[in-house]
Image (cartoon, rainbow, N blue to C red):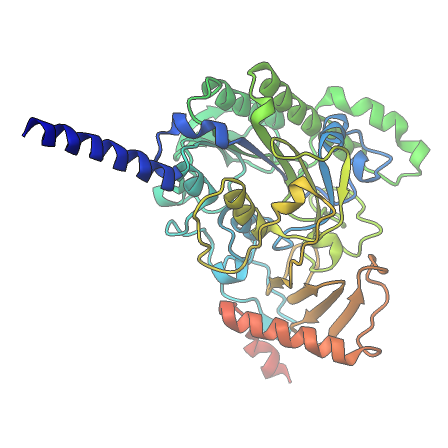
Length: 477
């Protein structure tokens, strides 16, 4: 009898060990740290594709980001999922396209053109609590999660806070987010800091990022930090001690850049440098993947002050589905990145981060929707074949940067732009026309129709919210 009892205990132990091997997510977090790199995801706000020195900008100074690019991979054809911020952030965190979520405009964006034949589409002004975020997925893998900075995915009620969406640590800009002084910071809807004009917002957000890293430097669990800076979004309010050299330099460049914007970028870059240094000081750097990108393209016209930046040679800017509104810088370095000072010209988009991280962690995660595609293979070989397939954009609104309801699809080298008000389409070959200056729609009608059919079919599949007829416009006719 005693022998049977011992046998059953041994059998139970063997079964437990076998089950743990089959299901890595069920292991105690301390046992899976070695296979789970820390992830630091740094998101800029309205940073244009051409704004960093490592992307060819001769005016701005971004030494820490340039150094990060030399240590890893600089992507030249990375896209945001939408030309404005809230939808693109939702796509990064869920892997779902904004059109599927019906979160297609920036929260607060309510512009209407009464002279247009269309009214903007009805849309959802928050990310539903029912959506599974990257933070929630990583918590299932044993991660401790932190969110610092701009949330902009809803803040009315506890179910819409970062804390409710999977973040253990939350420091969210909660008041006066367009300024860099006299703001407040909240955690789960409770104010934890209120500035009185003394602490620069970019620096304060960096302080909180360092605090989160310090709290988790022991490595009991791998960490995921989502650091969403508000910079360099307007208002253009630089630190006074950063501005003078850019003002002195201004005449040399014939007025082709904004000194205040350049000074804000310098503060931003120094914040990134402080985060990278903290990872080194805490011994976490070797096992940390650092991702840096922007939520959409830079501004290209005056808004609450002078024009911040210039997206040339790309066409247009934030709010537009042309390249200037959606092509963004992307730098990845650290754990899992074997290439150094590499460039990757494969195209990808904001919905692709979730499946990439899940493949990196070798999880059994099955995507609920096909909006994202992993580009994990590119991290070890930036020249690897990567058949991304079509990428879509859907912006059925009027932006405060003069864009109008429109959509686009890229498939291979070709890109089609569709204007919802007129039904007109434009076709470009991006392999030799990055500026989208040569419309090929009349020369290649077969290709244009092929892409339009794919775009139309995709909108039906995701049940995209569409612009509505304007009754006042019809009445005038």
